[in-house]
Length: 310
Image (tube, rainbow, N blue to C red; front, side, top):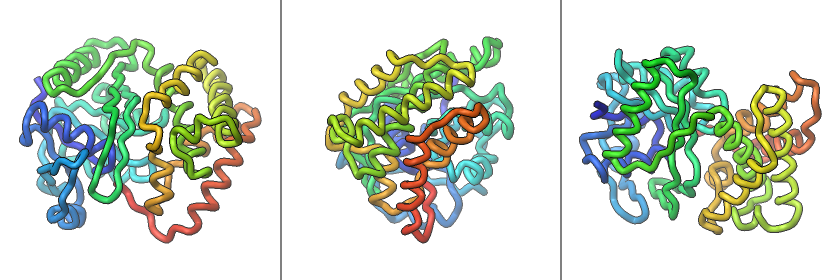
């Protein structure tokens, strides 16, 4: 039975899931693990979720001990540092979830900590926005869980996590076609994240007919083409499903990359367009929408002098 969770990353999703676990199981059920400098930085800050003050447990890496579940909730540029940060939290029976965007983090985590520990996860349907120490959202969304293979060990880990989320009140679903689901969510993020950053658009503005919407759909269709060449079928019906999912979010909200532009933080463009371009080059196909978005984001980011990892 899972009792204790460590979260790596105190951004929007980290705070979102910490607050849900605390609400369902109490403060002792979850902790944030981070370097000492961040502990010192955050210990005197007041964190709020939808206006409600949160009392989080912050643990320096050096004092961390093995837990039952690790949730990795950092941005892609911080992944390598995060893998080091969680080293003392991972024990013999620890299961690892990544709520990062993209289709590569699970493989990277498995290479470091073992394939059997990693459950494949898609975080979808939430509209969490974090500015400073304040998080707000109107939709919790859900975690979609799956396993890479049908080995007994992974099946047991999946059932333990599902039982834990049921007790904690964290919305979740299971998908036996988790790789297809991950590529579908990746397709959505490639479209809406990059477009909202480049065009400084909200969800509602990205859905309105016009240049931003056309660019979003074009970028998503390029992901469809790459996915097919990678052996994963993502259909036009899937594309429409994810576009319609945007309509359920706060119309005035915006995805993480648009928030990065406001907060002057480096974005995950290398994981989005960068990954699409790399795969397209490998398969010798053209992805002009993603090349354009990649170049524009890099131009925007030239204004930033530092990179923040949360």
